[in-house]
Amino acid sequence: MYNPQLETFLKVADAGSFNKAAEEMFITSTAVIKQMNLLENSLDVKLFDRSNRGLTLTEAGKSLCQDAKYIIKYCEESVIRAKNAMQPGSNVIRIGTSPMTPAQLLAGLWSKIQMYCPNLKFELIPFENTPENAREILGNFGKNIDVIGGIFDETMLNLRACAGLELSREPFCCAVSIHHRLAVKDRLSIEDLYGENLLLMKRNWSSYVDRLRDEIWKNHSQINIIDFDFYNMSIFNRCENSNDVLLAIEGWARPTAFKLKRSLQNAKNMV
Image 1 (cartoon, rainbow, N blue to C red):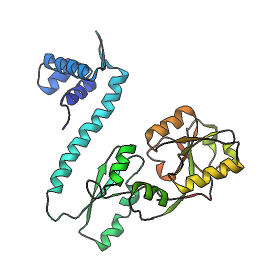
Image 2: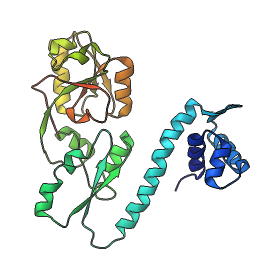
Image 3: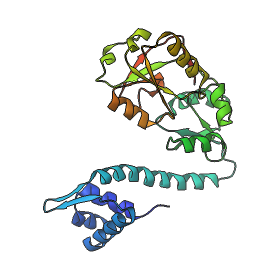
Image 4: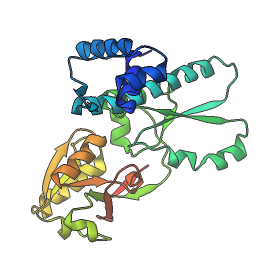
């Protein structure tokens, strides 16, 4: 399912030593070193800085360490899901979950659903939130994932060729770094955003965002709008590193380390 050298890499990264990793894996240190050399050569990156004091991860190594844990966990879960799919007559709803589409909203409704469908079960399916995955998953519900909880309107549903059920309406909020000047405020006015860069999803993704954009362009030119292509953790990292303001919803407060400020009260999103 994945390169087994990744597991050896994680052992070495955690142990900080080829010898210690070898002892834990009950193989020779020579075999561990050979695997790491092959991995570095195949990836064409340097994963470790070697010295007399031991091993330390390079920046590339730190990045791979984080991703490798996710890759291995996802592969293990995929095998479990494949085995579950072979069970006849299983009444399982597969809920897709990612930092931008947390499953808490749907999981919170489960006790009510159980009153009407007591034999129904649900399974959480983690996925990486990328534009490619979004197109694939939303356009093929029922294959690997049955439902996802997230923000939508008719524009987004038509774009992704899927159906949606409105559970609630939420006001727009603004995500800012905890170091931002607006982080001390509990509530924002539109004038608080004057002089700021406001990150908005590109046009034709949401009619609500498009109406907000038009309103700002027409009546609040003191706000500088910056379009972006897709909501994922990268855009939150950009918000933190650039000190810009990001249009968001309150449901994203937990998976991020940002201050969410209620703003623009007449603008609504559907979840």
